[in-house]
Image (tube, rainbow, N blue to C red; front, side, top):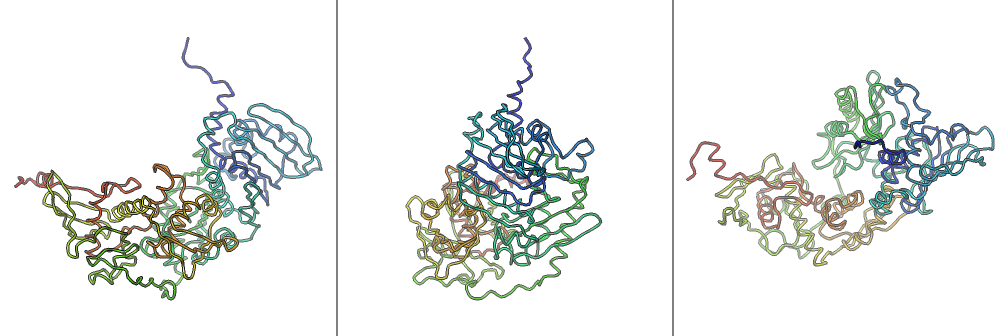
Length: 592
């Protein structure tokens, strides 16, 4: 008997469904795309238990006739393409004709629809592969789809879903991105009957950014508008000297389709080089309109990736668009006054002068006269049993069983510390090294339950996106014990009342924003450890930041006293070692 067999239809359909439906946000994405393609001006999304129990999407689009409602659950049934040639000019968000069939294969689905030709509509109920009911129903115009008990017939897949809040966060993030692409459409998101997003239709992208991200973000942006031949770039980009520590506010749309494309990201970052301070990433809401035949959107089942026929042209256009916009902006950095000034040193604290270091102290140019003038952010230091020596920091390590002193020679490319012993040369990534040091110190604070918070005299106001608000509710107990406390002020605004005293207020605000953007723990033992690693990463000295000799010596000394100097908490290499024997062998010299 042969080994190859044709799979049963019910098995094949569940495998195919897995390409389209991975989790609740996949269902929301497919249904919302159908609503937009149907010309809806209002889309309402309701979830229960993160979408595991219920996903309900209702729109006021064109709706379906009785014949359409009967066909829409069949595989590859679609109104959006008809011939092979149509695949070369896809103008709709959906086109594969797999969404409803895939969703129905792994859930209990009820569809109500009407095309507006009368008060009569139609209702379809399905469970897995079974059609339970097809009846007339009062539904004047539009479509409503209810998806219950996702993966009820695939318990193994249901087991791998994340927590309710995590799944909700993914949905909030998706709807935020989609709302940016369609400001003329009203979007509503409710979870367990609580409203999380309510964006009335507006006439311009700026108004939608204000709705979703607040005034602080909008004030940091400049207009983009550039056209060449039949290509057009529009949107918003960081003003000169603005930006963020992370890349969370970078959104790219190709013919209004939200996409993730490394080339677009690299082009945008390169376009903003020289306009932003070191360690800052540009914010951008970038819309690219190109002929449909110049882009292939049929690359991935999720339709989030694209392939350009002329990528170099697109790259050049982004560079040109940002350049033209920057010319209209002032390239003179304003003087910061008031609260933007560096906080004064707390009375009773000690700097790196051979005495004990107080939590939150920083190595700065005011301490060491040899500091580089361009250095903007001093080096964060955390509690230590002793301070490093004032001259050269000598860390004792044991290569080959013999203790040797590490001597710092200098800094390369403002990113790498070059240090030597009698036996080897070390090239140390300063950011990864500082991240490892801070992670070890923060983890010790965690172990000792020694986190101390301080109250803000004039609390900084943060504007949280819907996704960040969901994550804050989910992680509030952990954030409280770390020393972060927010107070709602209405709408998107929250006041940062307390924060860990190892950070400055501005730094604490940036770190908290990163904590609220991070996804699941991934390779970390738990979410708590992931949060500590994020705090260490955001607080660490950055690549490209000039350091004084004393700061370099401190980093070298502290690094080699950690338990794992080879890797940063995220698994990136920290140090390269070139043994003396290898150097001499490569250069044709005999060892002494």
